[in-house]
Image (cartoon, rainbow, N blue to C red; front, side):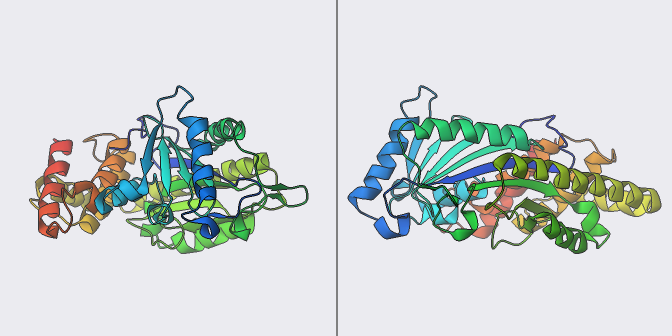
Amino acid sequence: MALWLKENAADSDIVVSTRARLARNHAGIPFPHKIQGTTQARMVRQAATDAFMGSGKDFKLLEMQTLSEVQKRRLIEQHIASKELCTSQDGALILSPDESISIMVMEEDHYRLQYLKSGFAPEEAYQVCREMEHMLGQKVEYAFNSKLGYLTACPTNVGTGLRIGVMLHLKGLALSKTVDTVLNSIGQFGLTARGMYGEGSSPVADFYQVSNQITLGVREEDVVKNIRQVVGRLINQEREVRRILYKNNQLEIEDRVMRAYGVLKHARKISSEEACQNLSMVAMGIGLGIVAPCSQETIYNLIMDTMPAMLATEENEPAVQRDVSRAELIRKTLD
């Protein structure tokens, strides 16, 4: 279960979560891909450890080399760590008790400061990241250029180093076959849409991450404001499309929702893809008042909790065993 995923969050009928992430680097030390396995890499890790582990906030440290492949995949599926971090020779992850705060050390940049929040909360997510940046800044002089801003390994992050991503459930737009058109249009406002797991990933069950593209030549506060305005309009558009779909096709929508609910309630084995698709439909049904077996957040948690690595008890476990465990977990949760 995602400990940071709380009920009654803002706009949770459409928004799963908001994530803010700041990319920062240690001045005078080459980027991670140049210093793997060196004394400088250990210096980078030690600075982060000193800043957060001694803060009295009960952070825990996970070293990537000590984790199994299943444990690494779980971190990725829960949106806590990236694939790049999990394959980094010197990679480490510093986590808060509820896992809402994470610091990826020696990923693409020396430090990736991240905060996850239920619902639509770009201002709060950004503010928490700023507080983390201040804590780390007590131990680290950041790589900064007066003309460019913060320096990062990838040019697309130079400037603010700030990414704010919002995980949206765009089931209505998908059913109306307008989701591609709508998401393509946000590019003119400096935003982009990706799959559930960010860059390079495909959409899963009509869940999309929408985030800012531009980090150079803008103020951090303006990035937050733009996310609030553009994503806010996207949320309203999704709600309106759902309302119209239900009004014009009530029987068909109710039938699809109840069929999905029936499968989830009674299946003895179910694949990850089928579970996600049905949970997605039930989530929309809850928002429309068609079914009320649980909260939206419970459905979102189920989607994450039923991913393959979350259910695996050992490496190379047969897929059918995970399918049985997945169906059992869903049935128990919906009872």
